[in-house]
Image (tube, rainbow, N blue to C red; front, side):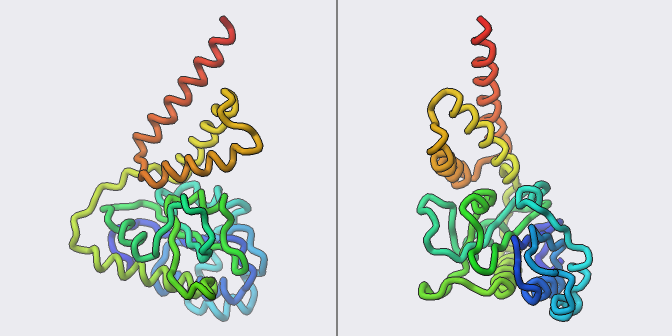
Amino acid sequence: MILGKNFSNLKVILVEPNGPLNVGSVARLCSNFEVDELRIVSPKCDIYSLESKKMALKGQKFLENCKIFDDLQKAIFDCDLVLASCGRIDVDKDSLFGTSEDIFDWTLSFSRIHNLAIIFGREDRGLTNDELLLANKTFNIPTSQNNPSLNLSHAVSIALYELNKSSKRNFDQEKKVFNLASSKQIHDSFLEIEELLLKVGYLLKHTSKVKISKFKNFILRANTSMHEINVLRGIVHQINWFLNNSKRN
């Protein structure tokens, strides 16, 4: 593929797009940059409309073969690394957030990523904070602070172009072996962690979401490996086992 040998699969994911022209344009971009698959979460327009097909041109095959999901978590279930685009400037200061160039350079420092997903949010309001937390990294395309939000298809075009440019710039650099915990592994682990911390009284129902989000951001910033997240999950399982069995004694 045009992006080099770092990826065996690149998936572009659109969340609740409401413009068929944008969807068609993104399908065309998928063809331009030889993306492997277009995925759409809960589309709010007819993605197979004549408008969409006219904009797609040679990218119509991405419309015909795109996978539709009713939930973002399901759309990234098989992805090893998940990146999310964010045009907002009011994101939490603790969020794992960087420029598109920095994030793509970091991504391409690995020798091989089997499934990479890039998520793009709604045209009018982007991705929610909960959706952003499903990504390993969140990137921003620098624009004017007076008007930071880009058109959906424009954002996709810039992101794919910069990813392709980064792959050429990093081509001769020594690569690291990819061993990061996937978005799904981190998400599933934190469901168990939140349940445990609620059980022992460390968290309260009405504040648990905020505190868990901060903890999750810490884990993401640390570039936690698969082994490390499994160790953390093992600790949680052991504590749960002890709590459940101590009640019987």
